[in-house]
Image (cartoon, rainbow, N blue to C red):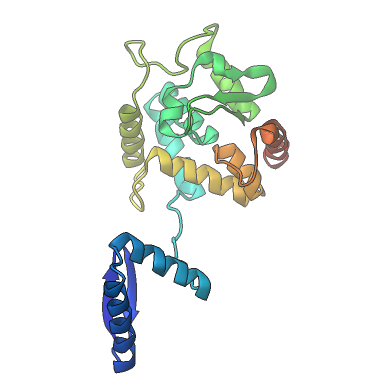
Length: 239
């Protein structure tokens, strides 16, 4: 068999006279009709449809995440660094926020009475409600004291943390916690949180809502209902 690469798709061509004859026949007909490159792509696409040919599914592998013990070591190391650093990492993890979403969080995004936080700067500039456990809400309330506006977490200069700085802090804490099995990033924490919730019983659809993924076939009219259902399931598995 001869390997043949077309774009990013790998095929195998059977090196037989009969198969070569088919290729030559197609080539002659294409040349006769002055078929362009784009037209040839379209033709083969339609042929595959008629023959119901589908590419083999690729194994995407497993998502890299922390074990529960590694996460506990990570969060302990964060709190050893400082109380704010510990709370930052705990909030980043428990909200499963993307790093840009996390650095955009403000004090008035927290609804303490409802035990939830509003993440406003997700992909596509969307807004979603993420339920929080009571212990995290209490810690955030103590951290903010009476402050109602501005970033939840501020640097020593009183400014907002940058995405890059949060990434650096996560890396530094992972090194302090002696986690060397994987590279730990904010996205690793997001995947770890998602995995823990799934292991605790959260359904795939509710997990997608929690993470800010679009549910297939849904429209805006169902968004609020989905958020309420997700909140209810979250309370059930974390209660």
